[in-house]
Image 1 (tube, rainbow, N blue to C red):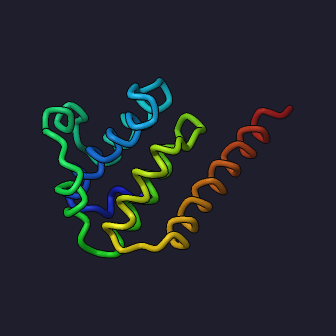
Image 2: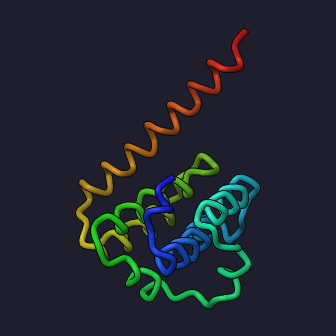
Image 3: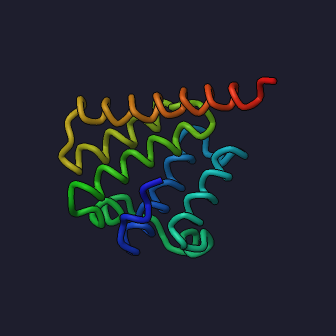
Amino acid sequence: MFLAQLSHPQKVAFLQLAHEIVLVDDGKIDEFEGNMLSLMAKEAEIPFDEIQEKGFDFDEAASKFNDILSKNICLLELIGIAYSNREFHENQKDFVGKLAKIFGFDETHVSDLHNWVVAMLNLYDKVQELIQKG
């Protein structure tokens, strides 16, 4: 949703982090997570195979986010992709918490981002219900 505001190196780093966050729950990418990864790669205008070819280094990826806007976009979008299968696994929560700590965000701020994502998911569910009514 907000990936267009990131620089190319930030988009690459984000997609690496996104790939990792969907794996930390059960080590697999389910259909919903795979679809969301594809959509985000398309939004970032970066072929996903380019991301998979690079090695992943958590600290290096995190270091690409050097301003408040990019840090917030990264965390918000990661929480969103973590919910792509409607679950926010404890390992995903830890992943977000580790990144938030590196970014210098407190738990209240992370909770606010999380609550916004959940509210958007609830609105999406509601609109799906409305458009399918006769």
